[in-house]
Amino acid sequence: MDKKKLFYIGLAALGVLIVYSSTRKPELEEVKGTQDQKSFDNSILPTQLKPPYKMAEGDKFPTLNTKKLVGISFKPRFDSMY
Amino acid sequence: MIYKIPTRFEEITLVVKVYTYEPITLRLKVIDSDQPNTTFTDRTKVVDGESIFYVRMPVSSKDVLVYVYNEDNGNMQSGQDNTFIVDSITKELLEKKLEVIDLGNAYVRSFINFSTRFCYNAGSLPTGNYQSDDKQFVIKYLPIIEDNGQEQTTPARIDIDNGVIEVSKKHFIDYTIPSRMAILQHEFSHVFLNDNVDDEVEADLNGLLIYLGLGYPRIEAFEVFAKAFHNAPSELNRKRYDTIKNFIDTFENTNTYLYE
Image (cartoon, rainbow over all chains, first blue to last red; front, side, top):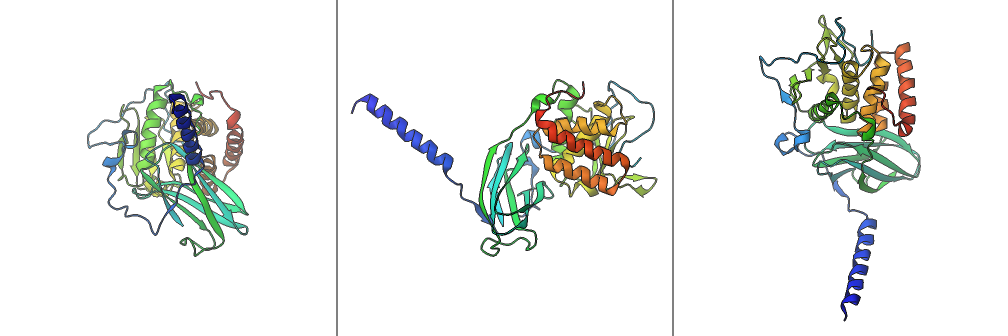
């Protein structure tokens, strides 16, 4: 069989495989109950999801350096009661 | 019914296709299979026939558990509840609109990183003070938020003198990750993006622009604001809700910065 024929057969097989895998419904794995979440270990998390640094006693708070400094004591709250 | 889906910490949209044999209220809940109190979505929808739930997940865990059940019957295993079937659960690319976020702003970049990590882990973090890597931002994670010994109804607030955000663990532990993100982007916007620090509507819109641009679900944004406003009904909050609804509805056509 010449090389050209083999190439087209391979190409057709690849096409069939792509169509098959894109239309195939993935098997659903049903589980009976929630997993054991007590043993959660955050060391498995990727860097972008690692817990933030927990400040220690004596760590300094940042000084505000925004484009607008406001000198009145006021704490806007999410539910805007005041 | 509970299904375990591998998500490998990827940014995805989970597509849950269901079919009901009569009009029923379906609950869809997606939680982290490992970390406690870590919910990606928790929503209900009245379904009559075929329907699709799209769950936008800018963050995901190694595996998720997808709960689907008839609200009236509670959660049952497949074969026990004949009012509906789960046809398929598939993963699609997450559609984001990062171009609407001012990522050239170092504050924005740092706070997105910090708040994402805080919100993903808030279900298992102990109370205490948490700091961003660049030390610009601090979140005081408190058991409850108090003023003069009086417990406050708000889930979060920001001190405009020092930019420190106070978060109530009592509220956050039950909130979904998207709800936590929507709240923190709002608080951040007050001090770091708003032209007028005490303008609630401006903070709502600046915060939502980041939240929606990152690809978080629209429905969770509605719910978290509705929940907060329900506890504090006022004319201002009614106006805020109307503005938020209009903003989310038209977001897909919005391509401009609302802040510098």
